[in-house]
Amino acid sequence: MELSMTIAIVAAAAITQFFTALVITLFVLVAEVLEDMTVSRGRRAIRDLLEFLPRAIMVRRAGGVCE
Image (cartoon, rainbow, N blue to C red; front, side, top):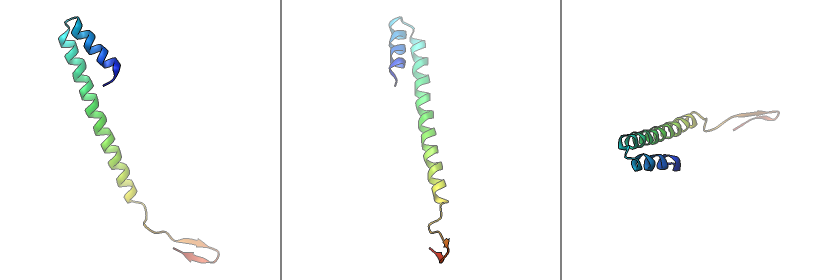
């Protein structure tokens, strides 16, 4: 959790705005879950793209073709 979010939660609780502190906490937790989902999907997409790369290639040069 970021420092600014922590300060906001503590400040809201200090002035007895517990509902506000709860909403801030909920937003922070939802943001962390969404971030984790985004990172895992991005990693999976990159891994899937890497599977499309060929395992071997053929190179054509003046002397012929080599693997």
